[in-house]
Amino acid sequence: MDYKRIQTTLIIVFSILNIYLITVLLEKNDELNFGDPSTSVNLEEGMRNDSIQADELSNVQQQIPVIKTEKDNYLEENMKNLSNQTTQMEDGKLISVLTEAIELDMAGAGTILDKLAPLLKFMSDGNVLKAEEYTYFSYQPINQRIIFVQKHNNIPITDGTASLIFYINSDGEVSSYDQTHVGASEAQGKDRTVISEKAAIESLYLNNQIPNNSKVTNITLSYFQTLNLNDMNIYSPMWYVEIVRENIPIQIKRVDALTGSVITAPVMVEPEADPASQSSNGAEVSEADVADGFQNLKAIEAFMNETMIDVEAANERVYIERDE
Image (tube, rainbow, N blue to C red; front, side, top):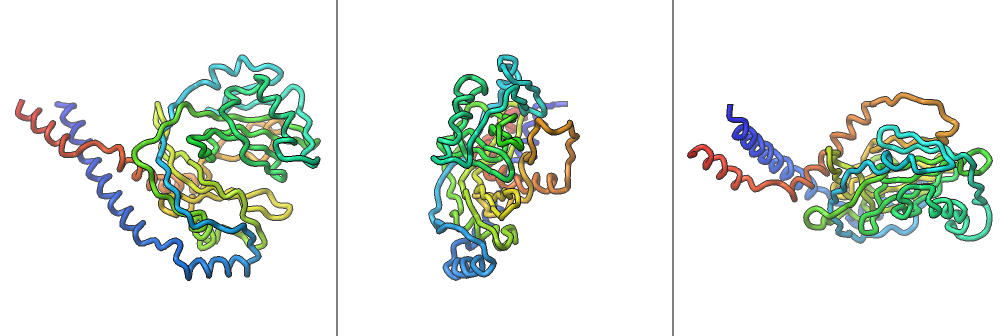
């Protein structure tokens, strides 16, 4: 059998299928009417009636690209160099329990970075691999964690695949952390126009994703992983949103910044407790995880629109091979 010719034919078929799917996707996007003035008025009024607080929401539509990141095994290859901690790798994540906990005074005076000074010193002293690549992103007191993330062109990756999460124990000390890491990143194709901050919150509200008596905070344009290959990952624009309620752990909501659809399941499991106090648990795959895979397909199609091979050129190659 001529496997090369079969492979080329399959590439052409799947490319045509992708073109069709992308066309359908774009037609659906044209039907969306985010930012309509009357809808905005209803949104603000509805949120007030439901006792949902939010700062003034921007209507600005930014432009950012889909990105590609290289895969690496840096954490696994270098965790043996870490001292004063016990480490292990689990599903690409470095999990560390500190020999001596780090004392923090999060209730004290000063900025958040002032309060994190002992932790930042711990990082800069070589106790965390690639610490210089991570930037402070979020402090979640009820969730008992402090989150740092990697960025591409100053836009954070907030899906848990490029994060450094420190866990606070019952004494208010950092006793452990887990870390994920991605290699060098680069833009793929042209910049994409994303939905506005207000449109993202509108999508969450209309899909009943914001509970009453809550506050919407930390609305951040960021990236989430949409394609995981052997040697690289593809990331698409996403709006990251934190929902705060009294005495309840912070909820994380995500909106696809290209389509405006709600991402209904986390890209990665987000542990709610200190790993130092947990026993080993098996991972489960839920129906929500499967549904999220289909949700991510839209962003993958958007990426394929930029990187797709020239179908006509591929056809010509088939004809040349056939003549030969």
